[in-house]
Amino acid sequence: MTTDERNPIISFKDADIVNGEATVIYGLDMDVYPGDFVYIVGKVGTGKTSIIRTIIAENPLLKGSGTACGFTLEGIKEKEIPFLRRKMGVVFQDFQLLMDRSVEDNLSFVLKATGWKNEEEISRRISYVLEAVGMGRKAHKMPHQLSGGEQQRIAIARSLLNDPQVIIADEPTGNLDNETADGIMKLLTGINKEKGTAIVMVTHNRQIFEKYPGRVMVCKDETCTEQEKDDDIDLELTI
Image (tube, rainbow, N blue to C red; front, side, top):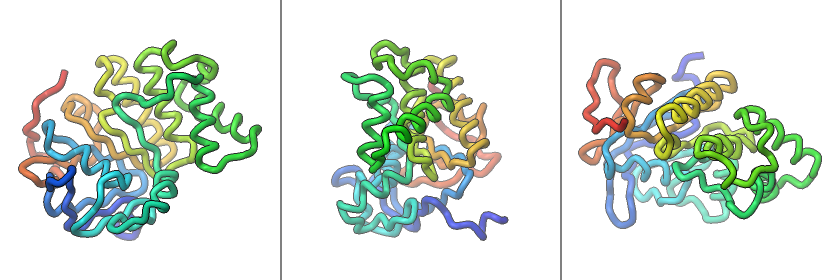
């Protein structure tokens, strides 16, 4: 099957991306297909995270068109947004775990919030995703008992709970040392290859997207365009 014959999971056409009142990217064209690994790269303040926020309907799409997981982003109704987010997994730089409850309870909370009711099925799904990220023995730990890398693995497990079409990852290695970041990238690329889950990842770390190749969208000068293979990317390196 060629790319042209597949439907994109995420698509923007001539879309203006806003951050508050300001337009940060003009005329975004972007398609993300099943199985893609897409980086959104650029210096701080170039609109990378604003694209992510638009995909998850946190920022409005006021000009142009956009779709994500079958939902139309322009004019999306408030009541539709939870259903959109159930179809995608989201991983943040700062983990965003609930610190007052165990790993298992963090994951159970998400499942129950998204409509799961059968306790046995909930327990089975939690075990599955924890095993998938190498955290099978950590279910009863509190987040503060885990290292940063372990917390991010739990966050990735959380993103897998509802078997998403796409994982949206906003600087998922930003708070981690190089070795730990490498482990997280191996985990994400493994999920992408083995499950066919599309990944859209924001980063400004050149070492990451050079070591783990994917499609690269470059944000600069109020635009975001796909990098041609031989183009050099003008980024401030993050070590």
